[in-house]
Length: 569
Image 1 (cartoon, one colour):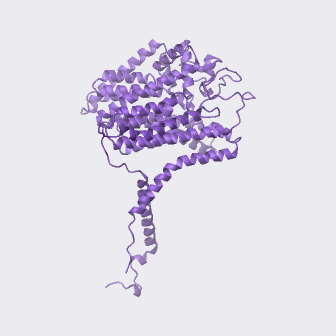
Image 2 (cartoon, helix red, strand yellow; image 1 turned 45 degrees about the vertical axis):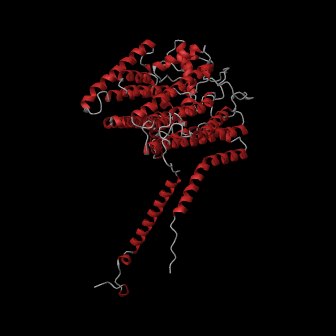
Image 3 (cartoon, rainbow, N blue to C red; image 1 turned 45 degrees about the horizontal axis):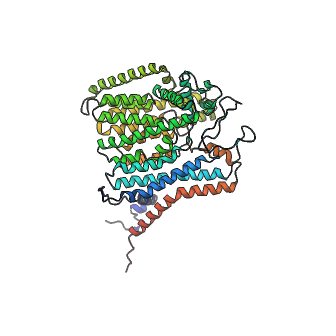
């Protein structure tokens, strides 16, 4: 017998009106979410038809012209904006590490503001501050856009010669070679440590303050004045030679470190495409992802960081090992580790894959232990030859001196300490931060071991890249140039989700920590509000133009794909 609604026998939809309404809301929300995801997907510009490169037919110059010119102009804008006397993106004064001392020196050859009327007082903000702000941040946005355009170009025209992109690399890099060290003062610390080496002072025993009041110590960040060096003996030996070659000139010493960083990126440019080809990937795509990456150009080259030389040795060593020369590869990775310790990961992976891909884990242990032991013997011998010993191993945790709020262990520890303080249990922040950072390193080690255990020859680069990423984000500090370690390795095999990860992380890392933000905040209080508003509008426009264009494209496609309603009757 059927239920009659009029007779008062309710059906299921009438018996549970709340449930039916809730289901309707959930279905509606799910539909809106699906439409939103589809809309976001349509915001991505379609790649278009893949047209492999054909010699003499593919118009390479015409295809490369627009993004190459945009990237070159953006590099000039960044260099010009950072070189303005009021720019916060490069160091502008030589205050000295001894309180009250006066040191006669200049942080760079040009772009230095006049001394303040009152010693130690900051110069008032003027319009050039905001012009430089727009030029640098706007230039970074444009360079990222040009880089993404080149990635799409390399993917659409497979097998493009790498030499075509090498010309773009030269054009984008040239303006960045003349700017003062960008976003960081590490190169001034390198110069001071090199001066210490040239004078027979061990950077493993003393900080740059040991040099006394001079130009070298005056350019070092006071935070590192009494901190010993965490760098390896090969790098410090090179730093000492650099100081001697430039006749103890502090600015020429910094130029020497930039040239070393450039040499490291050139090594990356040579060996990353070869590594990609050995894994069956397109060398030109790998070159664009790794070498033309604004994170690499702005932080490793313009910032003159020794990470570039470390990565160059590491990538070269891994390629040699894949080509059947594991001993030479092991030697290069060991040299890289004696520049900066993260390169030791190459030693471990070369040993792990020494006997091939099909052997058991027990068979892998012996060559891994032998490779590690040989590397340690080489490091011990070089340390003794240089005359420094193993003091650098005790300074590896010095990066924790900087409290990085982009570092998850620091954030967790600070929040936990704040909660305990609010509960009236006292201020235990130093102890808690130390504990969370130690826990972070243990988690990073666990991730590294698991990735190593599951790695196969075809996935070794992915495992190394993700390991370095875990070490950075679970370590004591996160710096933009640290993230470049992982990006270089993942670029060699990046496809689909890995490629998206490389692009997204590189874009975010370029702005990580908001370079120059501290100086900007200090000067905003004295600046003309109109200038602040105008600069903010200009930056917002530069940031939103690409998003607006993608939004309009997605909206247009949505209108085209919409099915017209069929009239009734």
